[in-house]
Length: 129
Image (cartoon, helix red, strand yellow):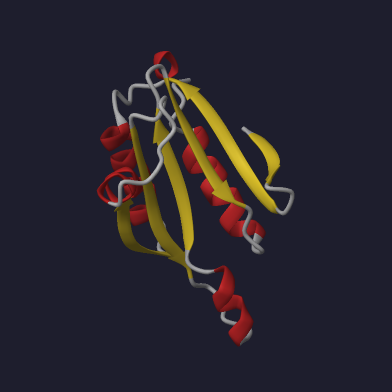
């Protein structure tokens, strides 16, 4: 897993996971595995699965040729609500893009280390030991 800055301002964690290094055969398998982790964590509320690929396709939008499928898991770590502005960085999302030979899994760094640690652990667990 690596950290990068997207568009010179967004701190993002990214894991490029070759399909040969996971038991997940497709994006639905990745989503199912991550949803199990979300459901098992009492600090997290599962909100939705957003099919970004279907949405963009329906709009006639532009999709990179190497992307086969793209989804976002939307959820919230709601352990603190210290003020109204924290709502601007919630809920959280993990993006999953399926390519021919790999999955690209990413999420924006959260202002809460506990959330980052959990999301990083869930994503890294997709890789076979």
